[in-house]
Amino acid sequence: MAYPFAALVGQESLKLALLLCAIHPGIGGILIQGDKGTAKSTAARGLAELMPPLQRVSESRYNASPEELLDCCEACQLNPDSIEMIPVPFVTLPLGATEDRVLGHLDLESVLNEKRKKLQPGLLATAHRGIVYIDEVNLLSDHLVDVLLDVAAMGMNTVQRDGLSISHPSRFMLIGTMNPEEGNLRPQFMDRFGLMVDVQAPTDIQERTEVIRRRIAYESNPEVFIERWASEQTKLTRQIERARQLLPSVVMPEGLLTLISQLCTQLNVSSLRADIVLYKTALTLAAYHHRTTVTADDIKQAAELVLPHRRRKKPFEPNHWNNSDLDELMNQLPPPPMEEGSGDTSSEESSADSSDSDSSEEIFEVAPVAPLPVLQVEDVRLNASSGRRSVTENSNRGFVTQVVTNPQTKDLAIQASVQQAIIRNPDHFILQKEDLQENVRSGKTGHLIVFVVDASGSMAASRRMEAVKGSVLSLLTDAYQRRDTVAVIAFRGVEAQLVLEPTQSVERAETALRALPTGGRTPLAQALQLTHKLLSQRKENPLLIILSDGKANVPLPGGGDAWQQSLQIAQSLQNVPALVLDTDTDYLRLGKASELALALGADCVSLQELSAETLTRTIVKQLQ
Image 1 (tube, rainbow, N blue to C red):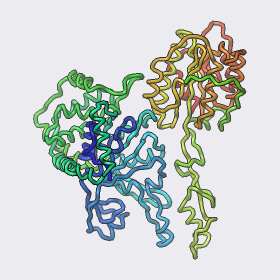
Image 2: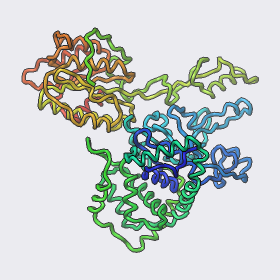
Image 3: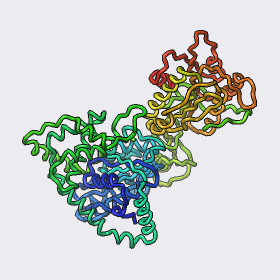
Image 4: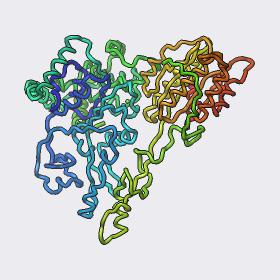
């Protein structure tokens, strides 16, 4: 029994966005972003019980409606006139789900007992005409992201594996929750979410108290609590039904359609999907408020939900806009032209939009002085096979590249195993251990890119830090797609500091790198020691980028030769792929950076013109 949607306290933007998606699934779902414990999951689960029930062919495993009888659906073929009412499907997609579980796979029982190939439907069949919910969507594996992108765009799931070639409709509302501190979403995936809401824990004392009071009452006696809110739940369900009925009649004046394009252009939104979703959301808002004509206020309210996650930001620009900024922008825009007779055209557009409403469209620590072990990594030097876009064989996930015989398999290739058994004894089928075949999968690998930046000195150090900031943000922009993470170690004075822990989050990087001090001496040995400790605790493929002139002058605690200590620690990192960027700008160069690179077993590159662009290009070239 889910917590009643009507009993949620506060979070008005979140509740509104969910109700709009329930009225018009063609909006394309919602991304709920925010801290843990802010009712993200509770609201998503409560929406399913709020939505009106569906008609389907009785016992259809594809949730086929009576108007869409499917060839692959046995219930549609055997008893197409038998109809039943079901709750709206709510399918939770596990982060560790396999492609077979999501897409569907060969029904082994049918092969063994009926000697015919049949699809065992996956989660995308169960979710048809319902909701797909993904908790921590930003942690979803690449191969599942690709699957969802394809199906969400087409509204159709096609299974071509194990000798099967079957397609079935799969139109669903996509609801994802995420904590941005744990990494960003792949930009293409974020754009698929029609709406985005950033939720925060309430700061009002009375509101927080009421949240606790209701939650305790629910946990003490769920049945009584749900019954207490039943009438409010019914009101919301009827409101959804009325808005759905009214939606085909809602019209948008032509001038407001122009306003949509003006807003998207002024706010630097590149995706045309934003204009379309903004149009659909404004229509839905009008229907929600029991009106048949869209107003400018509807456009503004829709923009607050549709545009923030699609807007392209400059580095260190605030992540969220204020409503007052949007008001100011709308006041600055020229009044859109209002043409007579535009209502009929808009009515046709809104009717067509409604008919498609089922379609579904982002430390400071000085280690003790001690001999350091040499870090071992698979790829000793940077080359094509160690690049970020490289493919790793024998991955637990990814696409199947071949099958091999393996009686101890943990990833069974069903059809290949069955075929092997039939070939061995075509007259008497028995699947034996020696017939078992294993999938060999190919998956993507990512890198942990560690910047070790010399922050000593003055103006030159400031320029290095600005270049690193820009490069970090550039690399993180699409880090989710490549599974890269980025960390920054800065050293100055008498210490080295991990100023940015390994992350995929642009927001976290912006916060950590916004203001970094520069100047002072050069504790290079401390920086390399901290780097060694960081890499020994991580499992990603490392790439070490050192920006320094190599002029170490601060020894480790206990004293000694700072330069020799630096070389000794560098030798312990010699199996880590690395690149030294020489920042020495003196007229007479001492070549310390080259010696450091030699100790690391790395290349040394002199960057005469250091900028975020040149630094990023240099790193990307190493990763290709």
